[in-house]
Image 1: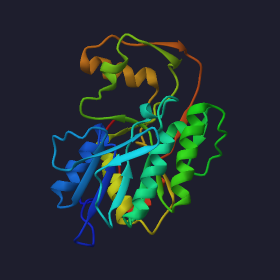
Image 2: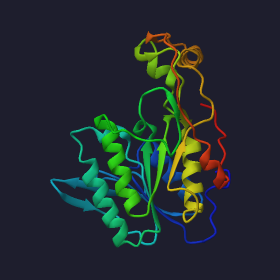
Image 3: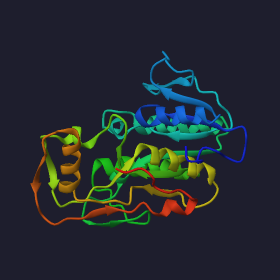
Length: 262
């Protein structure tokens, strides 16, 4: 845990909305650190004692969350933000319930996909054009949370246990330049960043990028990953010079540091 889960108060409570690949691990580590934890999924069948149902169907919320005075983390993955999902409505319902349960603070795991795709250096203060549907969905979700005095973490591409880039891209054609740089972050660094923000909730910025400071080109990065996992190198649609780099250094002001390689 690197100390990030240890907080000043003793009665630490956490609700994780969307206890999937990232959220489930966050729940486990918080519970191991002595927190009271509830992590949501859509089902009413639970394999972990911290699991609770939270599902919005036809505008009706069905839930088992009752943890008062807790921090809330929304870790619903980006794939749930497709047009057919009710992501925005689910987030609204979660924010309302968090308020009813006297939440200490709400953190949204957003994505660096909210930034423009054009080459450039992107920081938390960069303009966002909202020119595509994904940007609009991400930006609107962030605004919902910020309006309720929450915090936003813009996560880079996630790597970690059972999510190895070399396996994912092996043999594929990637619709990008081989010279484009990667913006990635390890699952454990994200979890540590979440604890750092909770530990400093009333200080610092409202929005933080969470991106590993290493930005190799995609050609070099995937060559290394495919070699590690014995996969076939992907191909790229171009070799044009391009650099879209998202900087994740601002959060280090909270005493957080990136410790896990991508």
